[in-house]
Image 1 (cartoon, one colour):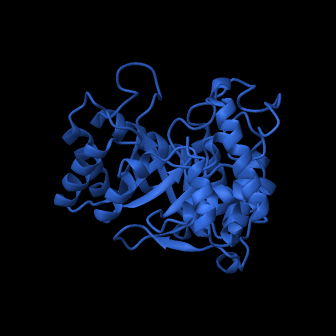
Image 2 (spheres, rainbow, N blue to C red):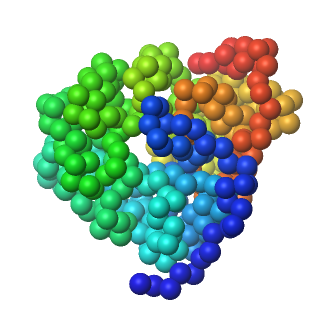
Length: 333
């Protein structure tokens, strides 16, 4: 084994992080979790990725959220995490809650996508090798597959738990009716769904309006929000136009037609409210999600330790007044 190069902060659980119970389970998750979707792939310096992971754990973030194709390139975020696991985190494995997923494109051919038993099981085996783990704490079906029988996908999750390759299972971005069936199927087989992962922020409230969040709570399932800053729209990044180095300008998932005049007006209004509260827009956006106790945790991304530090400031947010919530509701697209 490689000699550890890292000793975590002794006060990591006294640094201000708060933990919430995940549905009706024994698991407590940090209110802010770190996602490795971007900035942890093989195109990024390993030293930067390692610094962010160390900083996160030093400040009470115990949950790291990955997926098989996170990078870029595909699989490289898990490989990065595996290096850090081996060099730094191995002595502290039992303090960590590590999740990964499969459901989107990963390898060529008919068996590297969607929700078949073959894909889910093969992908997890690959993920474990990349991350240098014997098991993950949580394994997700990353998206609902309308073609594969629902029972096949869910039974694969059940069997993965029974094989000891995951302690818990979850679903991500499943439609409401399929999610209800998943909760029932898994509970009947004594492998309850631990958590639902969905996109949720001040500009996208579909999971709230569609009952996804309430349905999860009613079934004893946690809810974890991704894209809490709407890929940067809920920051000061675009208040004065589109920067040359932004995700929109670089042609990423966020497209230029996303930033309509009406949306920009809403974001500026939200930014003004955040300033009145003594916060950045990003801090207020994270705090707004966490105002709902049905939300277990929020997944943030980071490109630097300083950005992660700013996100963690949301934990010190003052409560929202009714007037402030009305202003925020008035900006809902």
